[in-house]
Image (cartoon, rainbow, N blue to C red; front, side, top):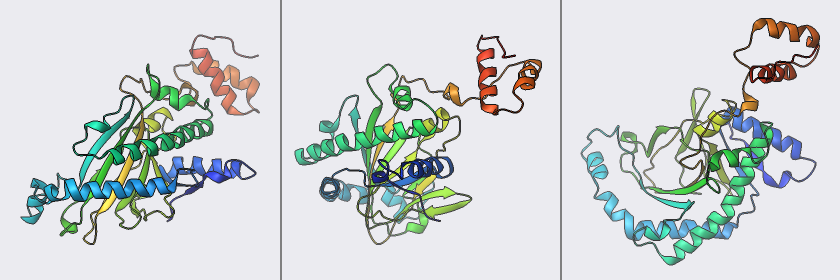
Amino acid sequence: MEIPVIDFSNLNGDKRGDTMALLHEACEKWGCFMVENHEIDTQLMEKLKQLINTYYEEDLKESFYQSEIAKRLEKEQNTSDIDWEITFFIWHRPTSNINEIPNISRELCQTMDEYIAQLLKLGEKLSELMSENLGLEKDYIKKAFSGSGEGPAVGTKVAKYPQCPRPELVRGLREHTDAGGIILLLQDDKVPGLEFFKDGKWVEIPPPKNNAVFVNTGDQVEVLSNGLYKSVVHRVMPDNSGSRTSIATFYNPIGDAIISPAPKLLYPSNFRYGDYLKLYGSTKFGEKAPRFECMKNMTNGHKNIPA
């Protein structure tokens, strides 16, 4: 079972239709996919991973192995409520807190900012493509996520999953769905661990090639799409042969955004069956979608039914 791969270089040409169909199927049936040829500077991506790894080795690693999490695993105590990870979170939009991260270097700050500037373009493009595939205006998701602000909220969870001496006793990150919108993951290209749940089975996501970006959809996309697109359960398994790097950027609604299913994606409701039969009599041999749309308009105060 192989995860769908979306080649962005095919969006401008004869293969656009097939690529859009593959993206729609990935959102509908998987809730995740890989993006290749995304036009993000791969040297910049490599530099960011190297700087994150250096920061971990110099500032985080020793404290993690002295932490209560590590002690509980060493003593083989209950580990069902802990995650074998060490993380920090950086806000980028609407305001940045990157300079508040303890001991973070100026080079890492600058590299992260450059990466996010490029990644944000990918996030916005994906929001437009998803909106288009749902039959909505291309800026629908972006506007829905923006609330009363100037744009969606954007933040990055930087995580290291340290080498684990007893991986059978603990999760790197327990099973969950993501609360937000569109998640764009730059992950380790050597150490595996990410798994998604599909069709009753856990599917291992292999380390990416050529810095492909892994994307999954969160709970708010499922709500906005009225359940057409799914947020999918996933987890991280620890590894006893190495530590895993994860740089997950969230393209999310801002805090005051009001999220609901897009009206265009809702079925009509609260109509009289007799009114539906009257409309059906004159539209029986046509498509049902216009009929449903007419009933929605009627229940919203437009009472005229075509003869």
